[in-house]
Length: 263
Image (cartoon, rainbow, N blue to C red; front, side, top):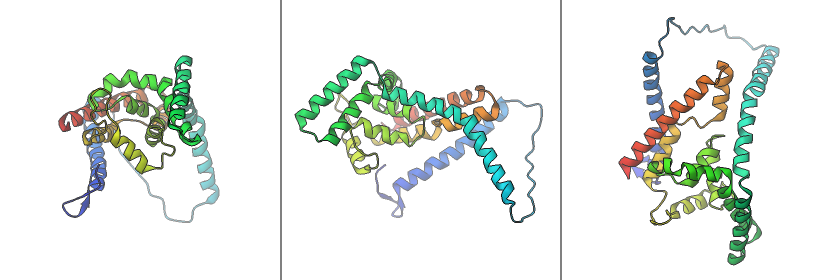
């Protein structure tokens, strides 16, 4: 989203950010209305909240509650989070032996040809290795499905790894584009702006792609912690999986419509 002023007062990036929040709120209300009629219930439920009298808290009770809730989260949701984290780490760190070896060879050759320093060579190696990893192969496998959204295999990898947390998307893209620090926003922005599609030479990251990606993350349930908590609260994988699939479908359709209309 370009950094410019609209209507002489509002920053366009701020307007876009606010729009995403409003879109999420509106769609959550519409979804709740939809499921009100789809999920029939024989019992009526009412929200009742009794507000206690205001007084100084009992610090022993506060500590006991904190310990109980924290322990429940760590031992119940934490097990699921740890399991998914290990899977994501393995996908991004390992790959077919031949491909990983070839990645190291190519990175070493390119580093020698360009006389890169130690840090730049390490960044380049990380980029080649994540492409050769199982996550890289999975990203390329997903590319035909996400191409109508304006995404390429590199974004596909970031979508997979960002299931741990949405913030991981930026770090993954920084690794793929051989950028040493994910905090170097200017460098990341420049690299993404210069990225082109092989064969066509078209820009990968256009305003249509950017908005499509934003819309995708408005709807997609890209948060393993949320799934873990839902699983703990419901005691079953049924509702977490239904949530993931339903919100994933909403994200795909919303992103598809956005990209096709803007491109």
